Length: 211
Image (cartoon, rainbow, N blue to C red; front, side, top):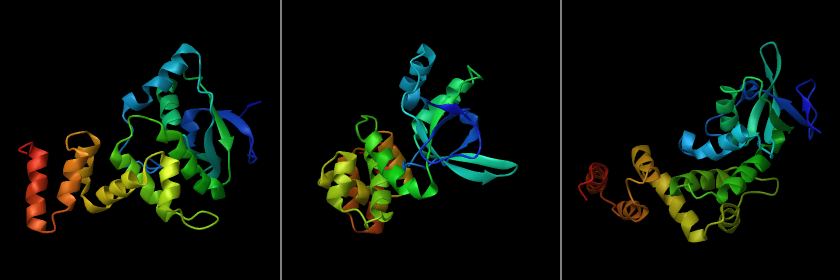
């Protein structure tokens, strides 16, 4: 059973606290861009209807001025929905599973698996998450392309394309791809152009809609 916020925290226990008590990194799960309100609207509606959020978010204990606090490890979309709902219901408490900082790597994979089935993830999201999964070592070493493919539930070819795009194109182009203004095939075409000047001109044409 979940209990209300108290100290000290114990690894593995579930507590309840206000979403406002939780600190979080906006790039916690590797996404390139911030969540839009529409991306957690379904969770917000569950809270409004009384259904609630059944799966606890993961947080690790941290030291803050004046005592102890919690830092988000996994479950950013649920936390953002909770923060939004808190504006309507100041007494709202969210369930938290307490984990230790060394569990962060497991949380990265958990986040990726949790989000892999969502239809609104762009190739840019996949690319940034894939890069983090590739670069951050596990307890047994780095992750292979095959392992990343299974975690993200996409093909190895898609993982490779996603990584190429996020590592080879500037942020302004990535954002346009993320928003659907530039197609993935067009982005891959740009990457095949080796001449920097021609590539720059091609990007400008795609961004202005001249192509």
